[in-house]
Length: 185
Image (tube, rainbow, N blue to C red; front, top):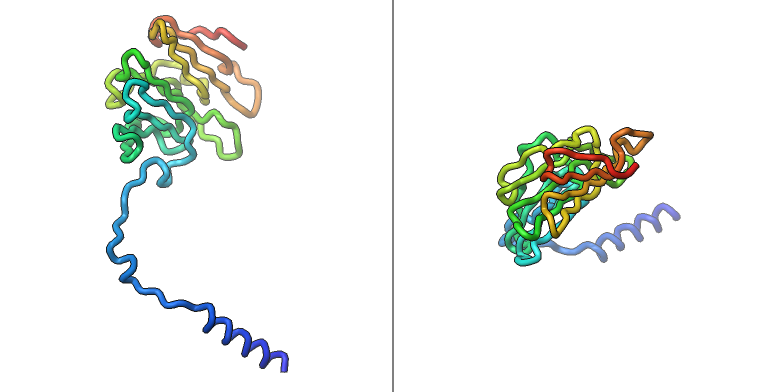
């Protein structure tokens, strides 16, 4: 009797809760690029051009650096040819928005932490990049450009998050990235 009752309830439930679905409802839908959300990792850094807020850069934990010139409607990857896709920081030189600095290596320690390879600088809005040093820091979490002197840049690096690391600290350049000095730690 219990088996029969279970069978009767199951059949009744399936017929009551099942609904028809027509592919005609979704036939007109087309896939679209939604930018950094599509399999490119956690967003770890963002900066916007203050004089033109349609231009923004978004760095991801393992999916590289993305640029939008449409206020976020469309995104294009701009760091795919570099040795790492892990971004920890991005900073736009507001006095000349064509100059963009990127600190590589995710700066949020967790079980899936991705390492980087130094700090990079673009002079042409992300079309080309040059490594400006700090390759052994592994994880640069912040880059700050002095608004009164763009040759002065600070980079905060955690080094290896799992133990002591000589490349952990705050680094400063006064010559646009040619040389770096550790000023803290």
